[in-house]
Amino acid sequence: MWLGEAHPLCFDAEQVVAELVNNSVLHVPISGTRDWVRVHLGFGDDFIRLDVIDPGTDAPAERFVPGEPCGDEESGRGLQIASELSERWGTHVIERGHRVVWCDLKMPDERSTDDTSAGVSPEQAARRIAARYAEFREALSDMAAGAS
Picture (cartoon, helix red, strand yellow):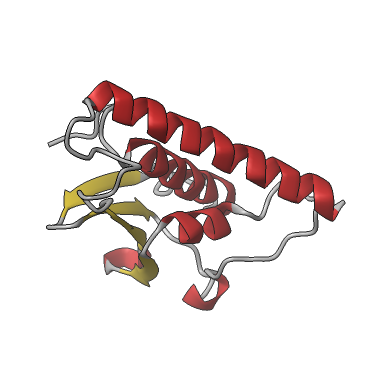
């Protein structure tokens, strides 16, 4: 199973993956054994799980908390965005020090009129979700501008 544009969580999932992969690229030192990142997508009954797995660092897990960057900082919001878009998230270290950061995105209530309710085509749902995504991006931009 894959997330297409009509899936109600497509845009949120893309944003979460972008933020978490970007964190891996920025914070994992590159070396002969640290030149990869993996993304896994899993499906539960009422949620999807995104796992981003990287080679890890020597930093303890406690560093993995959403931050409160100053308004003029150009980075530092990735975990905050992932946290806001997720129902729950966490991190743990697996074999060979590889780090997993995971997020569960809750499926919208089928009875909701905002998403894929009865009588709404996948294309209409995708347009609604795209509009919400644009509103979310605009709110982040306004938040950053207001804090500076």
